Image 1 (tube, rainbow, N blue to C red):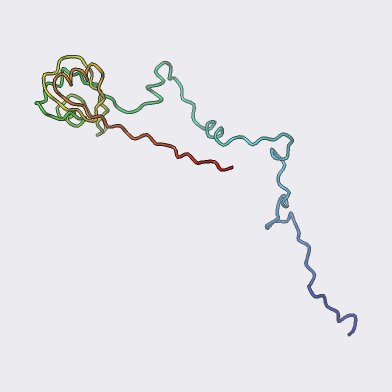
Image 2 (tube, helix red, strand yellow):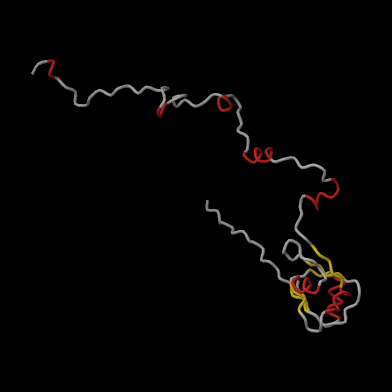
Length: 163
């Protein structure tokens, strides 16, 4: 065997060029400068960026709860106006719209609150309506009933911590 016939068991690997494009381009895996390269750097929370991008709303004043937190149409009906129903009827927002006591807006029935002005002479049952205390007394006194649909509150699942 001659010296020029000797071959390595593993061929030479070419040194990897970094900073020339490809997988190790630009910063060559060294990271950037900027905010992360400065002492005491702090990355801003993402939520703050979202809040900063929201448009500024002007002119709310004292009616802020009505303008910003608008919950949709609400209608008020007094107990005295419900005598147009016959005895034993079920009063719902749909039936109140049908009788013309409240108006539907954009094809949706509003939330209804029954107030206690006037006298009720008919026995009625109420569904999907909010009722004030004075109206509740007058409805029960007339022999009516109120069914309240309570939405189930979402409960949090507690996970036991293991030490």
